[in-house]
Length: 195
Image (cartoon, rainbow, N blue to C red; front, side):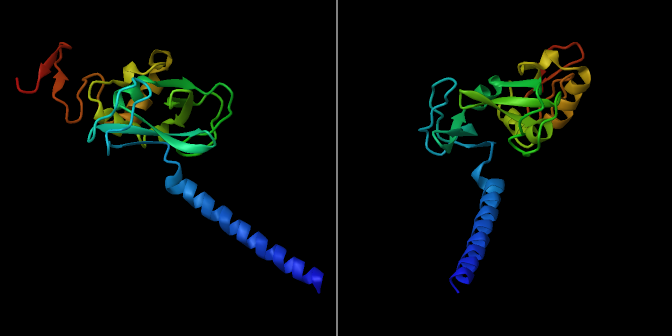
């Protein structure tokens, strides 16, 4: 009778453990780890770790989830500071996962690196980066994809792929920003839309 009781308890414990594991996976997939996201600053107390300046209430800010001190914390950056700390490269080892899609990287795969706080880089595949980068690019009208570190080392095909997926409203050859105030004329000089 005692052995039977233990088996029933173990089965119940296994069920409970599987339920907890399923709930944990749902939390991770939903909102526990967002990766990178853009929102309006709520209080004006957050300090950008890149420039050490406070982000005023109502201004756009980029949240980057970082694992630090045994837990997930959010580092808040100005959109321009976030973009200045990004890079394009190719995965050299075939190890690691996209922080957004959770898919494994393949050796030689194109990816976007962004600073987690200011200590290390988090990486997103191009499809994963397409979920957050266009919104951040729109928040900082001055930044161009060509300004991202590593852009010059990419093949023309990869540059075209990035432009089509990450900034479809930005036509780099014509430099027309979605909702922007300037565009280049055929001579390459900027002119105001008012002209």
